[in-house]
Structure formats: C-alpha cells, structure tokens
Length: 317
Image 1: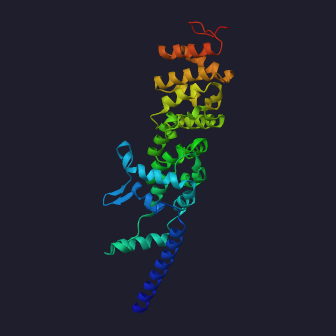
Image 2 (image 1 turned 135 degrees about the vertical axis):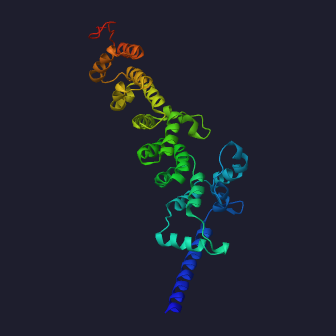
C-alpha cells in the first residue's frame, strides 16, 4: 500500500512538472525579446531572492546599473505588456504553495521553485508610464500585499489620472506604509511623472477631481502625518474643493490649534457653502486662542464679511 502511494505521489509530481515545462515552453516561445534576450530575463535585476529576503534595488545609486534594463523594457514597449500583466494576474493555488514549500525542503537547487512574488515585483517595476494603462486593474490588486504595495504605488502614480484614481480608491484598504506613500504622491504630484515636466494639478479637470478626493481621504485619516499639508493643498483648489467641506468642518473643533487654523484658512480659500461655513467661523470669534480668532476673521472677510472685534454677528460688507 505504501509503495502504491509513493508511485501515485511521484506520478503526480511528474505530471505537474511536465505541465509546468510545457507552459514555460509556450511562454518563452511567444515572449518578446530585445537583443536576443527575453523580457523575463531582462527584468531579473529588478528583484532577487536573498537569504535575508527580497532584494529590489532602487534609488539614484542604482540608476546606472538598472538603466540597460529600463532601456530594454522601453524598446520592447507595449508588446511586453500582456506578459507583464499575466505575471501579475498569476495566482498560486494552495496546492502549488504546498508543492513549492515541499520542494524548498529538498537539497537539489534545480528543483526549487521561485516565490511568485519575485516575478510580480519584477513585472510591476517594468510597468511604467501612461502607455501601460491596461495594467491598472492588475496593479491595483497588488496594493493589498505589503511586500508589493510600495512598487505598485510607484507604478500607478506614473500612469496619469486613471492610475491616481486607482490609488485613491484603494487608500483605505492598504497598509499604513502604503497610505503614507500615496499621501506623499498626492503632496508632490509632478515628481511622479518620471521626468515629464507636467503638473497633475493642471493635467485635466478629472485629474483635479482625483487629487481633491485623495487629499480629502488623507485629511480624514487621523493617523496620517500629512493632514496639515493636505488641508493646505485643498485650499489651493478654491471652490472646486467644495466636496471636501465635510472633512474640513470637523477640524474647526480639533484640539491641534495649527491644524484647526489651517482648516479655517482653507475654508476661506475654498469659499463655498456660506450657509454652513459662516456660522461655524463666527463661533470661533470667541475662541480662547488668538490665532484661531485671527484665522476666523481672515476667512470671514473672504466671504465678504468684516466681523467686529467684539463678539456678535459679523458685520455687513
């Protein structure tokens, strides 16, 4: 009985390996290449498995080292996109995970299977620019994995308004580290255009809507260290940011006086929904903090009112 079970296990392993080899053959035979080297081979330097974990070199110190890889990916262009998306969408079943972990325990290195997340990191880092928009849904699914989210945020932030929309939609569903990275991207949008001298704030009205939505979510994230700059950014949009008022008005009672005063000034810059904002600002004329009183007077003047320096209703223009 034991011998029969052993034969069945070996036969199953052989069948799995055969199917994998056939799949690899067809993948390799149709995969685009550049200078006689396949796309998969080119992007290997983007991520490697080390005894300490994953190594994904990035930053200025690796620019020259990775430049040939980026050049090859650029030359292959959109022809490589279906293969990169396929790498992102490929999921490891419970059986495949068990099988890979089993092979990891055996001594023969040639039989060990790579962690599929390595391939996904390589694919994410190879998907850059607005031309890669078809990859947005696949990239967005990677945001939930803390290991992959950093790379996915970087890729999506370079895909224009639709990539930014995917980041904003997933803001509440990602790790704190990923939320911080998305917030940083929203604070400095132009820097994520990979060298293109274009500001996201001026790219299109839809882009402005995305930015306002994203900044509003940052303001509502009480754990974010970027709430104050997010409030300041919202003010620069003027009346277009009127949808942010439900997030800004509660800040008028925030214990942090700096954040409170920033929200007051932003409301004066947005200058929308006076029926709601003017009474809220008027109440702050009696605030014990002089800075809050001054900010409230400044914003009330933006609405056309000149409040008296004694408590009471604001004066008429």
